[in-house]
Image (cartoon, rainbow, N blue to C red):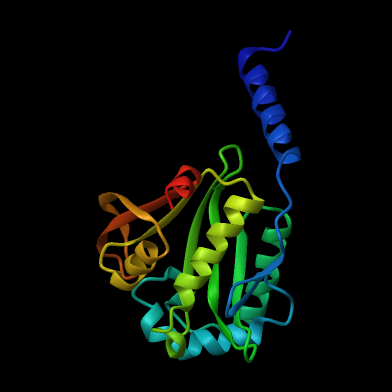
Length: 209
């Protein structure tokens, strides 16, 4: 007879396998009016690196990975690792391209995934030269629509530093509701304490739209 810890492990492992088998197909590419949104692919490193170099001063206050400018090789390694995480459904990173000219605009995706709900957290950043054209709001709306229609999402979240007014404005424009402000919840890239805003959008909200 199994002892309780082993039985609990087997029960949890069986549940994990059951959930994995029920996971829906995740589209590797889809479009909005102006954007092509797709999974990272080998060869994307140079485009990503160019966007980071252009935008590093704007990214550094908010993104822990933007402390230093990466090399092209490091950006290429990142995109290949991101593609692997997408394939394994550990994380769902997505790249944003402008359809009119193929320009890489920035990154987004769904993270901190709970497939048993299903629940996803949407993150995003955009290159400096593309700020102010509504691309991020369009991307978030498109990703949310895909998550609800293709992945059977019940809950979507956006989290950001309370001082990041642009990120918070995107969440509101994309139809998310401010749900909470967590005081001193984490630290900024430079080590200061920060408050975190949590925005949510539920499948049930669709009926009211």
